[in-house]
Length: 126
Image (cartoon, rainbow, N blue to C red; front, top):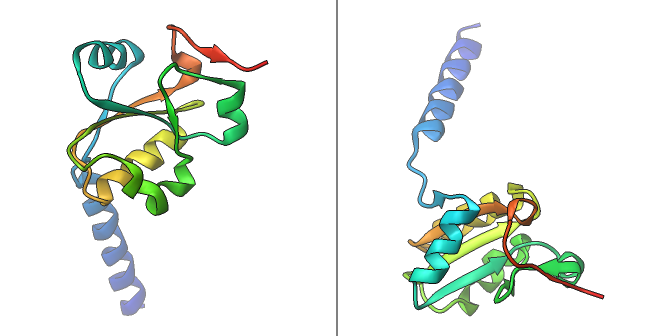
């Protein structure tokens, strides 16, 4: 019984530590992302969806880097200080990609969620 209580307390402390750990990226909205693109000379716009989704529609100037390939392809990005704007379909995969990039040492990460909430220009496939 003592071991179970000790284990439970340890797990609760770990969960509390994870919940209060600093987030190394910013979650922004589409308008803020558009403003960063307009005001920033050098940035990378990453679509972290699949190739098929990208072919169907994407934001002009976006580069495809599927969220599940971030760890193996992050070396393709200019450097860890480059402004990186991320999006996916709804926001779940872009948050995963943002966390992965932060874990790899990238420092200027902006997650604006999903293309579903992008009110600006979109390129659609045929």
